[in-house]
Length: 99
Image 1 (tube, rainbow, N blue to C red):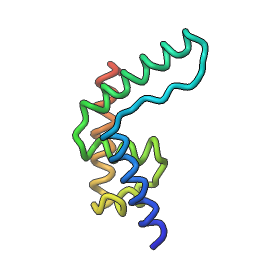
Image 2: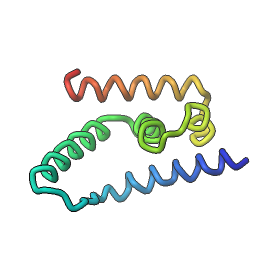
Image 3: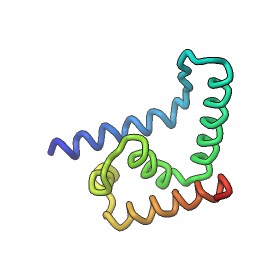
């Protein structure tokens, strides 16, 4: 089905992003670039603290914008597992940032 196919593409994009971890920088004032790079580095460090499965679920939800059902289809896991992984991932990110 088309939604499953599209979800799989999104998951592959996440995998590719994780492998490459290349930064893209837009032309911005110098101060804004430094702040952007610092917050990006912080988020990458927070994501690095997550398990591979938690990180993929979180990226699919928060960066790609997939629904829980679409994530379940893309990762071939039950909906409850998606909820659990996202909950754990969000909690670990909160703890990383001291919230």
